[in-house]
Image (tube, rainbow, N blue to C red; front, side):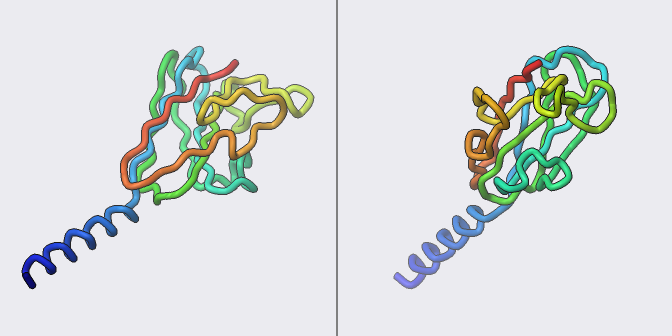
Length: 141
C-alpha cells in the first residue's frame, strides 16, 4: 500500500513538473512572396507590448524565402502569447507603413484574424501549455 502511494505521488509530481516546463513554438509563415530581405517574427506575452517589436518577449529574424518559412522558438514557458511577423523587404528593420498606419510590406498575425485598424493582442492570442505548439500564419501583402 505504501509503495503504491509513493508511486502515485511520484507520478503526480512528474506530471506537475511537466506542466510547467518550457516548450517549443514552431511558427510557419505561408505565402511569402519572394526572397528579398528578411522575415521578423515576434512573440508577445502582454497586450501592452503587442506590435512593439523592441518590447517583444522574443524576436527572431531569418532570411526570406518564397513560399513557406518556419521559425522555431525553443524553451517558451507556458502562458498566453500572440505572434506578429513581417517581411522586411528593404532591410530597414521595421514594418513600413503608408501614412503611418497601412502596412506596405507583408505581415502576418497568429490566428490570422481579419482586422480593421490596428490588430489587438486578444484576436491573435493562443496558449502554450505542456505540449509543443505549431501555428500557421498567412502572410498578407
